[in-house]
Image 1 (tube, helix red, strand yellow):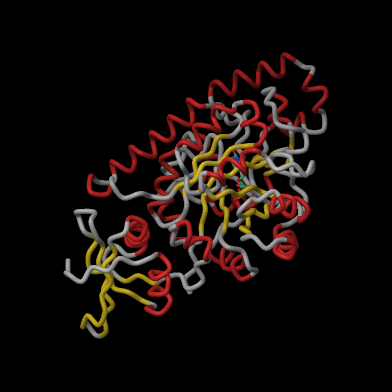
Image 2 (cartoon, rainbow, N blue to C red):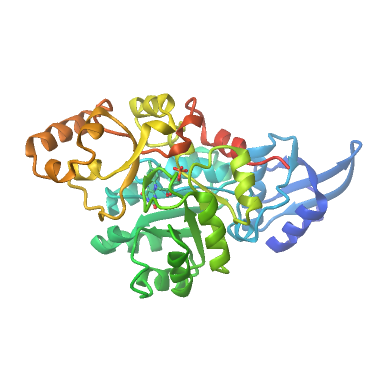
Length: 401
Ligand SMILES: Cc1cc2nc3c(=O)[nH]c(=O)nc-3n(C[C@H](O)[C@H](O)[C@H](O)COP(=O)(O)O)c2cc1C
């Protein structure tokens, strides 16, 4: 490394990014003490930048490993201030998907330059969170001893009724000091500021929630939340499936002054470009990451995801009812149909009272039988064509300008 080390504030790095355009990265050091970037012109080094601050290192390391393999980096010219504040380089957040997004997936996404999130859904618990935080740490260690000291940003996502039921899980999440804390599917209607927002903000942890309407986004902003996801009806998993992303995003951006992310069937770089063009700070992507090598999904469920089409999905409560899961009725889920779902959709009350049908479903669930048990996915599931590492998904989703 050269001696001309510079201690740069992240904003200074950001300016370098904008002014520098394309960089040739000469070295990603093995000592974790510094990363040197060189700008070359016709083979001549015309400029160099040495990053030594942990946050800058994190930025450089994730960018370097994800996008260049020792070659040329093209910075994303529209990387938002929100992304920069989090220390991420790709405008991609992997949604906190319960049962899918554990520590290994979160690590792989963050290492690739996006923001990986650990998801605690209906089966969330302190033990599950501990396990996935440990998986994140283990993946970080396994990435190379020299990497281990460099902090990678990551997020944790929970559901509102989940932290009410299990406040200890919330305490554990705070103690992990994620770069971003998401609590979705809570109550924005009452006008009360949720305690989780106050607590997280007091610790300097950035907060986010998902909104299905402009009113919800307004209420979240009034409650002091830092950013909001406009989640369209196309999205996979649970939610309030009301409005297509296109119109919802415009309404939410018009309604609040905090950064707005976009979610709902974002499956290609063109989709990401479109939501960035519309003014969102980043894309919040779920389904596209479900079949990744690092996800918690079983091989059989991955096959279902690969084979499925968006037209095979529906929004229903049948899965929740069959397993007696405590999801509020106004948050049904988008999932891939199975004959069981088709049979009982529209007959939910009957299913709730049918112990034998529920017992059969529970047995199928315990056996991992995905001819009966559905897999959650959004309308963008058509774009899942193979099992591949999350870093590839981040790369494929990141628009090349
Ligand atoms: C399998 C799966 C599980 C999900 N679990 C959660 C969850 O536990 N908490 C949450 O806030 N959102 C969850 N979501 C919703 C995502 O946060 C996001 O809204 C959605 O994935 C975006 O749409 P997309 O799937 O089309 O990308 C889940 C989504 C999927 C596909």
